[in-house]
Amino acid sequence: MKILLTGAAGFIGFHTAQALLARGDSVVGFDNMNAYYDPTLKEARLKILKEHKNFSFTKGDILDRPTVAKVMQGCDRVIHLAALAGVRYAFDHPDEYIDINIKGFFHVLDEVRKQKIPGLIYASSSSVYGGNEKFPASETDRTDNQVSLYGMNKKDNELMAHTYHSLYGTNVTGLRFFTVYGPYGRPDMALFLFTDAILKNNEMKIYGEGKMQRDFTYVDDIVSGIVASVDKNYPEEIFNLGCGRKEELMDFIAMIEKACGKEGKKVFMEMQPGDVRASLADIAHGKEKLGYEPKTRIAEGIPKFVEWYRKYYGL
Ligand SMILES: NC(=O)c1ccc[n+]([C@@H]2O[C@H](COP(=O)([O-])OP(=O)(O)OC[C@H]3O[C@@H](n4cnc5c(N)ncnc54)[C@H](O)[C@@H]3O)[C@@H](O)[C@H]2O)c1
Image (cartoon, rainbow, N blue to C red; front, side, top):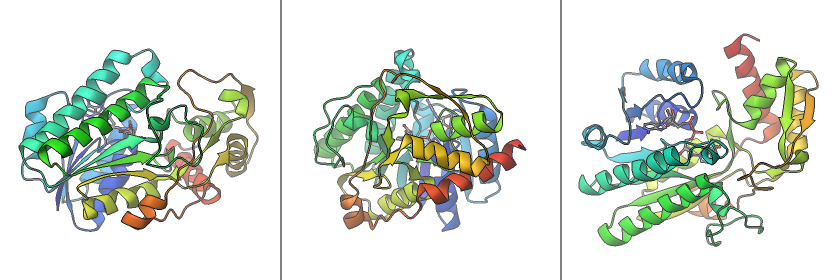
C-alpha cells in the first residue's frame, strides 16, 4: 500500500513508518518539524527513515491545505498522527491547539473525503476519558467530561470523524493511545524527563505527589494496533490501545532508577491542571477486532528506553 503518514518525524510516527516499510508498504512522510521539542531528535528519526527506498518525505504543515491535498494523491490509506501532543503545553497555548489539532485535523479528514481515500486511521487519546472515574475505561463509556484542552481536541476529532462517516461514508478508525513510551520517545514525557534527571543528577519533579496511576504502553504494541487498523480498515471504529495494566507512578520511577543504576532526587509537586489521577484501558474490543495483544510490560520496556537514551545522548 501507499500510505500517507502525518507526524512521520514524531515519536509514534517514526516507529509506525519503520514497521510499514519493513513489510513492504510505501510511506509518504509529512511533518512540519516544529520546535515543540528538540527538532534534532526529529531529524535523527528522519535520517533513519530516509535510508529506506520506499520512504519519501515532505516538510509541510497540515494547516496548508493545498500541500496536504498534494501529498495525499493516490494513497491507499492515511494515518494521521500530526498534532500538538502535550497535555500541559495546551494550557498556555490554546490558539495553537485549536488551529493544529482541530483545523488541521479537518483538513486531513476533508481531503480524505474529497480524494476518496479508502481509509483514515487517526490518533485519539486516553485523554478523551477526562475526569471519568470508571476503570478500566472502555470505548462505550461516555466521553463528555474532558479536563484538558488537548482531551477536548481529541474528542472533537472523534466527533468530526463520526460525522464524516455518517454523511459521506468515509472509513475512519480512531485510536485512543494510552501513555506511549519507548526508544526515541518524546522529551516532554515522564520517562524521558525522569531518566534525564536521574542520569544528570538533577531534581526530578513528580506531580500529583506521586499518587498517580497510568496504563503505560510500549510503542511497538501501539504500532501493532495501528498496522492492524490499516489492514482491517473498518468502516467506523474507535479502539483503546493500552497495555491494559495500571501501574503506580512510584513503581514506574523505581524501575527507571533500577535501569539507570541509581536513585533520583525526588521533588514532589501538586497535580497540574489538565492532568488526571489515573488511566487504564479496557482492551477487549481491540483484542477481538484487531487481534491486538500488547506484549511488553514496563519491566522490559523501561530498560530498553534507558539503554537507547544512554547510547543516543552518550551518557
Ligand atoms: N505519545 C503518547 O503517549 C500519546 C498518547 C495519546 C495520543 N497521542 C497522539 O499520537 C500522535 C503522535 O504523538 P507522538 O507522541 O508521536 O508526538 P510527537 O510530537 O512526537 O509527534 C507529532 C508530530 O507531528 C508533527 N506536527 C505537529 N504539528 C504539525 C503540523 N501543524 N503540521 C505537520 N506536522 C505537525 C510534529 O512535528 C511531530 O513530529 C499525536 O496525535 C498525539 O496527540 C500520543
